[in-house]
Length: 201
Image 1 (cartoon, rainbow, N blue to C red):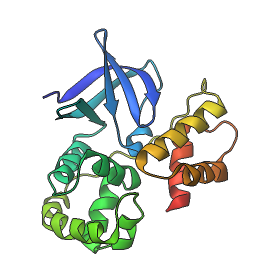
Image 2 (image 1 turned 90 degrees about the horizontal axis):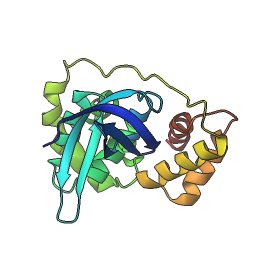
Image 3 (image 1 turned 180 degrees about the vertical axis):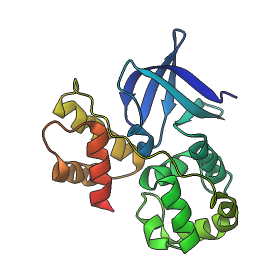
């Protein structure tokens, strides 16, 4: 099991990263919420990781905080919740938001996440309620720090944002409209994604 990577952030193509560790590049998929806390390219980065082994692939998922990785592990333990849906939930809702959503029985907030219908949301609320009791007293996730990549062109940022939203489960037309609605000159892909997700909520 690969539990942590510490290296250099070589590439950032939401929701995928390439982290170089001693000359080896690791492809890592992260929730979109984690993108806002990442350093700039070619800067040091540390990710807490979870390795999923399938017959056709070894997939590495990365998180800025251990608590995020623990949430991911809780989610994929649930029947019918795979890594893709778990990342979608964590991309649409911060850890504390998801915990509060479950505790309050907020089905509406869950169904805003792509791939989560009413029945799935109801099942998630039931199965997660007891699991999240132990989370109530844990410290909150570090506040988001938005960083723009000054060297990234607007067109590149827009393309990255579209790719990330489609990977999250939105239809290309929805993603395109959402990004166009919030596009401003000079915005990074991370900021575009954050604004687009808020606009679609």
